Length: 244
Length: 244
DNA sequence: TCCGATAGTGTCCCTAGGATACTATCCCAT
DNA sequence: ATGGGATAGTATCCTAGGGACACTATCGGA
Image 1 (cartoon, chains in turn green, red, cyan, orange):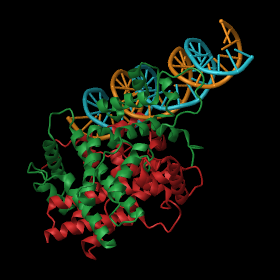
Image 2 (cartoon, rainbow over the protein chains, first blue to last red):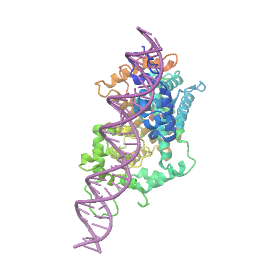
Image 3 (cartoon, chains in turn brown, cyan, red, yellow):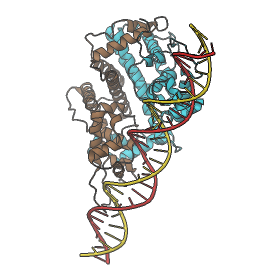
Image 4 (tube, helix red, strand yellow):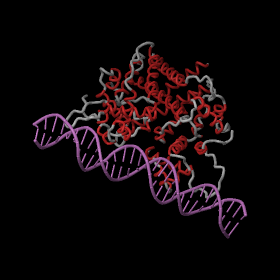
């Protein structure tokens, strides 16, 4: 029940204050380290984050960071939780479907602010306080849906998985020809055309039809993100109907 | 239409034979390199794949690999396409829903054979021949669904995203306490209990209810994978109904 | 037979994460 | 006030990885 035997990294994630405060007081603190790392990632991407550079940005040496962070992987987890931030208040208007939509939109906005979040190696189920706050927000939205808790977690998994995956795809599309001044539309077009040259209609008839067609040509691109989200929401609706 | 101006890495992905065959013939070839790398990853995970070790496994020097592979990232892409393998024949029994179910099960099996696939940084939309074959298989399954091509691609995105994300979660759960002889159930239980100590009911009432309850206690664990998949399938069904 | 293209090698460099032993600093009890 | 001990930050070193580059070895064709 208490903080006893919480592993050190979890303690830092939750900012549990160290019990003793003896000796020389720290100039640096965890949040400064994490913030510096997040700033770096915002500018240069996840690859751009090295202990060296983080320390440099703070005016300390690389090794001093290890006083506050157990390893680079731990720093990554801290960065992710920081960048996710606490979930916003989603309000109560419109029932569960609107609520989930708002939840998805809100977390999508975070991904947009911090695109490197999608590059983050998935480090298991949510552990940090902010991750938990997003979880809490979703469970709140679903509280009157009639679904049992386990199922609500299942819905959470599917929805957050969808958002993450959709963002990753968008991101990597945009990243492909990064230096070049090509737009998203250009990249998709280029993608479609290049593959059209490679995909043999004998071998892959259906895919060939896709690349041969104009799906990847500039058009009134229906909002892919919304499409997938509404599809998932329809699935949730079915689950709720089934429970009645 | 021809192979002209296909980038070198794509050419290698599709195994387009080099136009000229002058000079000293190669002892090594792309497939041997890729296979060795995949074997290594199967044994030691993605982290265990270094150019050094791949070369060593083949009895060559590290730098010789660069004759066949442009960079480590390219090797990763080649590995992924190789590990995915060509999609199996999914048959025609049972309509689209059974078909998609089989598709998901089949690709899930590949993830199980090559768990490191989920660690692979998402490198954008499918580019390799095997990735295309999975795409083709899904489009084939959906060919009589009444959905237009763009929507079919949307369904593909959602389904494959779901499978990937679900596998990643499962994997990282299992990975958490790897050396320890704990079972999946133990890990989930430990996770739930640890977080129960951290999640304050005032701050996160709904999440606290979750961790305070017995959702993460050993029980007849409903199959999480199937649950999410059926939810997604219900969403697809709704999309198909909407089109009529 | 030898020229030139290609395959594979040896060596070097840079960067990264991290271990370890050190010095500097400050609180607290005497 | 003061010195001992705990803590913060530093200097130095190591290992490993990716990759550049110049080199040698080996073959096919004119």
